[in-house]
Length: 93
Image (tube, rainbow, N blue to C red; front, side, top):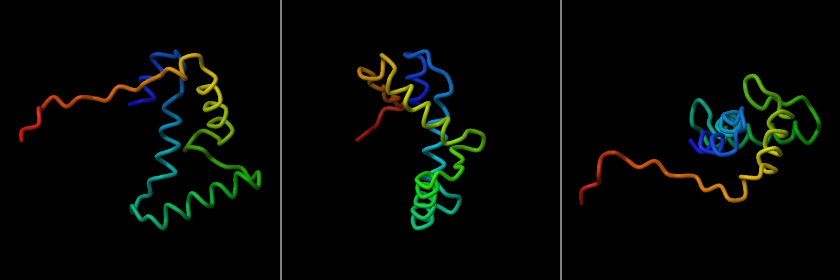
């Protein structure tokens, strides 16, 4: 959602890769926190050791890293404030 908003403001493409990458690191099929931590640790060790690391199913870690650098360098990044989606159904108390 936020990647889409920033893409519209900045005119940048491929921002969905950032979301896909973070979801890939943080979510596992079995939703097991220990498995998630192990997976993140392994990915970071691979990155530090300069082993080939896949950022997403079809993008390299270098691509993701370069994309993040471009996002941060974008003129719209400093002032970007994501908008929360408002539910169509009002809450009743």
